Length: 96
Image 1 (cartoon, rainbow, N blue to C red):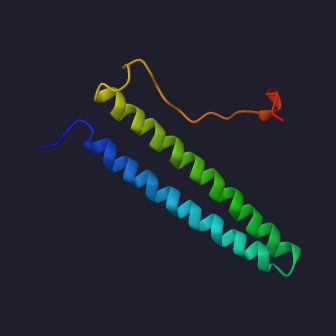
Image 2 (cartoon, helix red, strand yellow; image 1 turned 135 degrees about the vertical axis):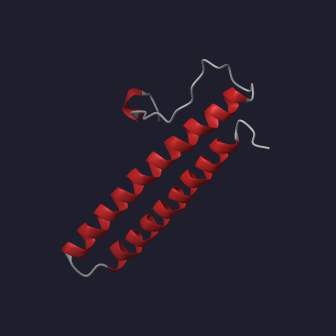
């Protein structure tokens, strides 16, 4: 029997797979940056690291959205609540 959260769970698994792939990309880029012998290799690895970070955030955002939908569907959260990843500018806070 399929539950209401079954499709979400499958999609979350896919999103987490994307997170793991992005993490591998970041780790590989870090290794290349540490071993770079010229600026071109370093810059390429830096771009790969940035791409990996963007991919990771997109996959995490999707996983959070899907987990929120599961929570709403199972009654954990009010149906009118929506969870998401937000960007905070720490310069707006008095952090010491």
